[in-house]
Amino acid sequence: MEAAVAVGVPAVVVCDRLVGFVEGVAARLPLRRQRENALLYVRGLVEQGGRKSLQPTLFRLEETAARYESLQQFLADSPWPPELLVRACAERVAPQLGVVAWIVDDTGIVKDGKHSPGVKRQYSGTLGKIGNCQIALSVHAVGVRGTLPLGWRLYLPEEWCDDLPRRQKAKIPDVVRFRTKPQLAADLCEHAAGWQLPAAPVLADSAYGDDAGFRGRLAQHGLEYVVAVRAETSVYGPETSFAVPPRNGRSGRPRTVARPDRAPESLRALAERLPTRAWQTLPCRTTPAGEEVAGRFAFVRVVATNPVRSRYQPPREEWLIIEWPSDADAPSDYWLSNLGTDEQPERLARLARLRWTIELDYRQLKGELGLDHYEGRSYLGFHHHTALVTCAHAFLTEERLRPTAPRRV
Figure (tube, rainbow, N blue to C red):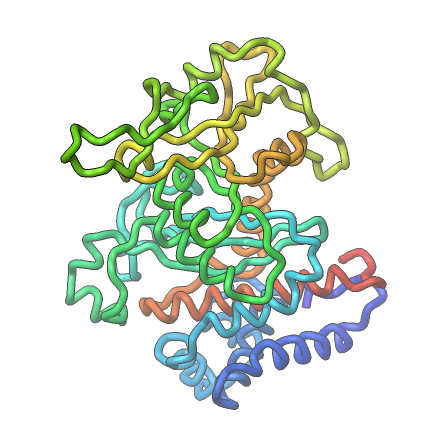
């Protein structure tokens, strides 16, 4: 049990704690055999070994062919909701983390062939290029004492959603329809917001932050956010006033939508006209070695153009956070946030710069726990696998939080 064994802790003690942990979070699964299979699968993910796909895992655990068939059915076809396991892990472990943010992102899973659900040649940030892969979206709680996945969704391109024979082979439920990545991410955040979890601002890169619908859904459900946006994003600057114009004539219909008194501008244009006094140097990130990293930021109250002009929504003021290094010719990053007007600038800067920690999570989930090792071709099986990987990750996180936890071997 290499991933969990620490110096001075007998393996049998850790194994007993693993059994207790999985039995606790899997108690919501309806059938005894499901709970037994969940324990065996998580044990295979946590224990040392190479590839974490089903067959080599059971070989290392010296299990029988009958157990292989049972576990294969448990993963691919058994109708247990994966959210049961993810929620149980989240509600048990997340309150221990000192949660400061929820981070939304996606990761590419390289695949051969064309039969795994959602696979196609598509861009993956993980690969840094277009490749044959699946895209898995997730939201993670990030705290001062660790991290924890709060949910997973497999992205299905439109060509998959419209191809009935492929859907049937991959066992994709009829209720699953095409959803954009920002829509899936908003679904995950709204779902987790209904659990007993510490609330925290949602962080995301510009692939999500640029989507006005994503930001609007988070705000509508009472979720705070700090999300990256592109320099070309259009906003109404802080000098803008909004008012509902009078109706046309005495018999015209009364107007209800507030209109701005000036034209919008790009974030880049707004940043370039800010006075020198608007910029301040603030600590924004702490390295793993404990060193403080500072950045040069400006904070401006703005109203995004798209919801007002294209969606006919009332103007909603947000923070625009801009980072412009003193030695650069242009700003390096922009973020929009719906945190309160009295929010401290340093917290805004730190939240904006916190999203990089998601990469550490993906590295452990793939490198140690086999997130990308599922070889089945079942849509439900993929989500069962991610739920069980989440369970293994949650157990290891709880182990590291133990007051007497010594260093790992």
